Picture (cartoon, rainbow, N blue to C red):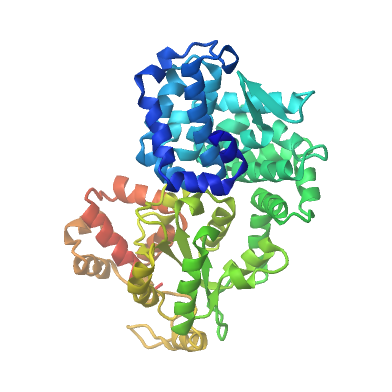
Length: 505
């Protein structure tokens, strides 16, 4: 009964977590009578197997409660559900129990734990059950696994969760998921099936090796183009997002570069501060927006400015930003929409400031790579918002501040070199005039005198190039620091990163 209510009501699933029922359900998995070796391969509710029936009901409730209310994840993790369910996935011979365990695990594992559900066997299971559901001739898009039934939507939602890990994206495509997802884009599928399939393909498109395969899949791109005109906004957004990832982003960058519209330091043009966030933290972000506006900043936030095509609005918001606040959370990392915003920000080489909006969250996966070792500000509660906003404002400086742009541009033109008084060429950093001795002095000022031998021959131009590399390709940059410049200690690394970020480029 509880399992059925969880399946039908997100509100009930939410209350189940608050009431402590989830921890109680997970604790059933520690019952000696319910261990994997107590459940036979042929156990079923039809045989009135009491032990099997109790275990099946518990895991079914878990799956339905997390599927319909993903915010229950902390309750599962607190109760050690990952380890307990993984035990059934590995050791239980009963197909229904293994399937329900896997379908629950995809919602509660972290990025670091994804290998526990991403072996070839698990990925193949998702693909085979989806294939069976689409071939079902007597019940529309449903698949029976033992005595449990999964709908195509449940299976695709699991695939979306599985594809949150970048390594799984390539494996899913290699093992044949694209033709099945493309079938769900066609007219004989429901609108919700269209939407979930488009979201799944959007997630898969973030892996470069998948892009050509998606474009080559018969009917895939054509259906995405057709469905992007749907009246369903979520479906429209997913189709537009996928097409953007498949080449639209690069075309936009090339076009804007050709007509010179990506220079966010144009004289007289006031840019804005863009807040890039996942909608679940909107109330907190509105408060941040209000504080920034009160401090004199021009702020863009889609709660009030998103109109017409959401993708076009996002692109324009990033392009016209002086700085982007990337508001980090696990849901931000898992959102293809948020990833699209963040990656476009990165590709345009826009300044960005990481802001943590989820308590104790450490950026992982693609978001961790993008952030690198940048220091971030924590506003994960209203108290921290009040305490931290002045620090964010200090970090922003004049970027996005009303009335400041023309003054900054004018000052930049009036700067002169330290050696002659002649105007410095436009866009040239004063650091570029440094000699090798200046670089040595600079390192010493940041407590890195012991590293100077590794920088023999480095002048100001090389330092500026390193700063640009840190912005554009942080993963490669930090690999070079370790392997080529001999940085071994974290303290030295943080000092050098700070030194680079404080130079005037």
